Each structure stands twice: as C-alpha cells, then as structure tokens.
Image: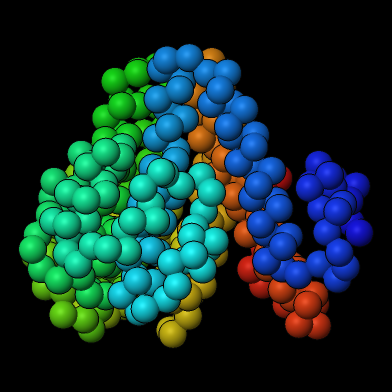
Length: 305
C-alpha cells in the first residue's frame, strides 16, 4: 500500500494480493533495470563504456550462480530466474555444460566482456565449491582493477570520486576474503593473490591480512586505518555478521558524497548502487512484515538520506 504512492507503484499495481517479498524485489529491480537501460541507450562514449562496467559485477555473480547451481544439480531454468537482470548475456544458459574453467572460458565466456578477466583463472581443474569461490574472487579482482584503471585514465572529478569508491570496494572484499577464508584450505599465498592491487589497505594492510588466523587478528590489523577501525570497534566477539551492515552504511555515506560535486560520471555509479541498497532495504522490511517481526525492522536497515 505504501509503495503504490512511490515510483514503484506502476510496477506493482497489477500484482495480486498479498504481495510476496520475492515479487516486490523482482518488480523494484525491474524498474532499476529499465532506468539503467534508458541511461545506457542515451549515453555516448566514454559514458556508455562506464555504464557497461557497472554491469560486469552482476555478470560475474550470475556466472557463479549458474555454475554453482549446476554443480549441485539444480534446474537451469530455475537458476536463470534467480540471476540479476543487469548481468544477463546471450550465452548464459550454456554455462551449465562446462566441467572446468578452461571449458567455461572456451565454450561460453570467450565472447563476453568477462573474457579478459579470465586469463588468471583458466585451469583444467574440475569445478567444485572451492574452485568456484576462487574463480569469483579472481574475476572480481581483475574487474575492479580494470574499472579502476579506466576511471583513473578519465581524470578529473570522475577519477577522484570513483577511485575512492572502488578503493573502498577493494578493501571491503579484502577484509571479507580474509574473514571467510579463516579455517579453510586456502593458503596465505592464495589469499594474498585474491587482494586487489590498489586501495587504502594496499600493500601493507594486505600483508597483515594475509597472515590473520582469526577475527581478532583482523581487528588488530585494521587499527591503523581509522575508517575501518571504527567499524570493528562496534562489533563484539562473535558478531562478525554485523560487519556487512557497517560496510553498507560506510558505502552509502561515500556514495551520497558523490552528488556533492558536478560534471563527473561517479553520480551514475552512486545512483545505481544506492538504488540497489534501497531494494535491499525493501526486501528486509517486507520479510520482517511477512514474518511478523516488525520489532526487527531497524536491525538491518541502512538509511540512505
């Protein structure tokens, strides 16, 4: 009822009641995709290339989703419905036939924009959960470094704002990779290879993160970096899952600052990211309402403005 008075209203007006969370998220995402495609259709170079870079992250997530689902014998059509519409490409359904990284590249990804990022992770090893996760992080590393170089080359306010936003993304991924790999088979050298070659933590913070064996050591490594130290100071022992919310809050602050300057492309990146955060907020609120847990609504909401 509340959404009918917003810009999401037309996308939800023909849906039968009661509205399910999945339907709300799907229709709100569809609105974002329509607006993004409108921006892309009106853009000329170099803005069109910049906007395409925004899609690549979703393309990587979709590739990983399909490959992981296929590994666990899930129906391909069901997996395609779960893919983010911003990351779709023509040959995505054929990902299911690949048995290893080399086949994945040769049969499917060689003709997609992700092809250049695959050079570091082409192996003949069979795809399993560990290899797929390594593939995701290797692809993201190559993608972020490429996007960073592109923005730096543009110069001006675009370079200043985007390099800060991408550096934050690279640092967040480095911290998450470290925490998620604690207690796994991943060696310190393998962990180090997954960190991006830029960001506030590069290179000395990466050296410290690579040798961390528990969350307390990660907290200690972050003490030299005030913006990250303040996040870790808010979480007590055993509450590392709250870190994601603090990262989202910090990201939203930085994205909002992108609108303080004029004549740069960072606003397009910030707009898409803030809309994605808005959709995450809507998903959380609607889940809380559906499960009659209204008292928990504020637990994971990230306020945008």
